[in-house]
Figure 1 (cartoon, helix red, strand yellow):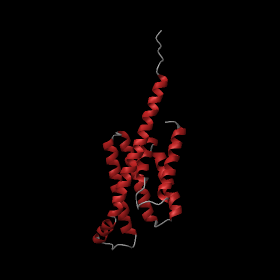
Figure 2 (cartoon, helix red, strand yellow):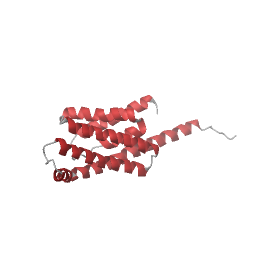
Figure 3 (cartoon, one colour):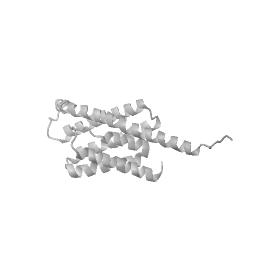
Figure 4 (spheres, one colour):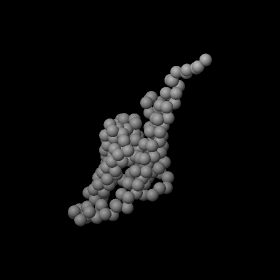
Length: 181
């Protein structure tokens, strides 16, 4: 992929991520995890990290920053999703995309709700408090899973279709023109 195409794709993903977080949406129903995965698969880790951190930092500047420990857990979870994207890249198939998306969603749920329990003031610092944190977050998990799977399916589908059409167009241009007389 050319540098210009990579830059355009990265910019598109940042704009999509920022818009999805700032425009009205169901809680946790955003393409941020899908963007981390897609950016890693098609652009590599460096671009992926830049895209995700830009999306989160820009939108948090508007939405509001919060406890640095919880922010670290949120941002770190998306960084891990980008790393999972590198595993998906090695065997890019529907099953690995699905498993990568599912594992990223579950990891985000476990890490961020642990951080809310550990560093927030909503739950008792006990095993029961941790379990309560996870139980109270189940509606958010449902939205995250739905958003992550839908957006990952759409983004991967669009990019694979684009690559297919680009290759098909390139092969038609490169095909020799035979003429019969």
